[in-house]
Length: 97
Image (spheres, rainbow, N blue to C red):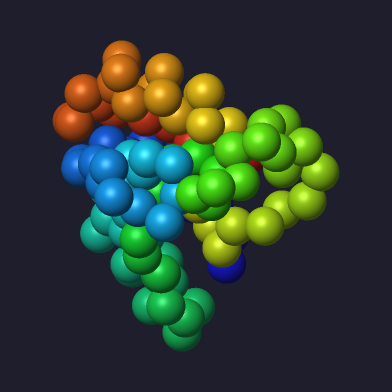
């Protein structure tokens, strides 16, 4: 239920997501799985960078007032449209706190 930190890749995209466009992050990697196993917890999966829920784009930046994702990175619909356009699959990303 937290956003992972580290270096990953955009490994695929979902234009039919429940959210306005979604870029999938290549999480968990082998190191993530090992760290989780040592702690006896699941590493989780399905981390996305995505826009707002479909039909809620009017919220814009107001969505930032509350952490409402389960580890994903939520951005405005306009921001995800730009990322979608300029970020090809395979692009390296670094997620920092």
